[in-house]
Amino acid sequence: MNATIRGRCGFLCSNCPAYKENIHSDSDRERVSVVFQKLYGHIIEPEGVYCDGCLEPDENNIKRLGTERCPMRDCVLDKNIPHCGKCSVFPCELMERHLATVETVVTKARTMLTPEEYRDFVEPYLSREFLSGKTG
Image (cartoon, rainbow, N blue to C red):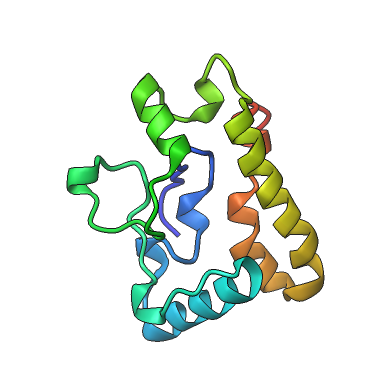
């Protein structure tokens, strides 16, 4: 893994198995495709597994995982702040819904994933403490 990279919502992109720096083979793509479908219900074909993250401006960002715009990213960019945790209204309703969805997946993941899969596919998305300023 390379330098620590946090998304606008606090996700630890540098540890995400779909992040561009972590995809080294077709088997990496296949693993992400299988676990994302199992855990999140996202059907992403292996050849579509590659994410540039959300820090780059749209014109420089070749590909972000997912096809919809991220409302948290849009909000952070509109407010010209580095991430949601720096917002004067954090935690807002949008962020609370987002974090609640992630935390719901955590409960499901504990029974459905191996410890290694949990580390790779859940832990990068646990961002509440980071955004609250409780971790670096």
